[in-house]
Amino acid sequence: MKITCILGSPRKNGNSAAIAGRFVRVAESLGAASETFQLNELTFRGCQACMACKGKLDRCAVKDDLTRVFESMGTADIIVAATPVYSGYASGQFKCFMDRCYSLLAPDYMTNPQPSRLPPGKKAVVITTQGNPNPSLFDDLVNRLQTWAKRNWRAEEAHVIKGYGLGPETALEPFLKQAEDLARSMCG
Image 1: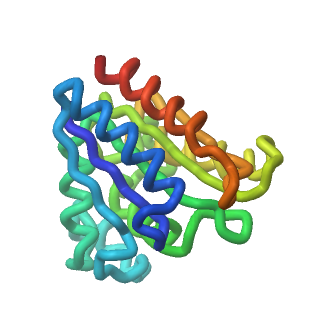
Image 2: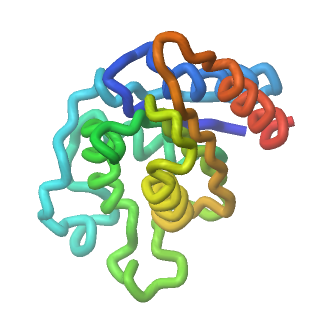
């Protein structure tokens, strides 16, 4: 089993990275291989709206550090995507990555029942973290990311871990435990 983990926080050791890291470490202890990409450390541009991926190419025309991320996603069994909630949405780094995932969609993605170019059978784990203690705040974002993972990454399952109320004095442990339990159920 192979896992591709995409970290969208500019903070290398932030909450979303910690939760994703726990998932990956537990999965590795169960025999999974993994690749982790810290988006903030990569050099990449946003979608250029060139439409080459819908015409002459079956991939993104922009060659940068996301090329390796997309290759890894293509061979992954599980894609883990983690982002903090910034201004009510995913981090800027993660949003830029999401835009570039447009290249993963087939030219006829609007009418194709299987719009993604990625191989079938993938599973996804969507992790969001927020400081606000209201667990239902930003559910719209979480639902969009979950739907997006199923459609754009061809994930048959898209699990969610939503960390909320996270601040300097908030225990991260309940969300780390969720990640651990989910890794055991998906990889055990």
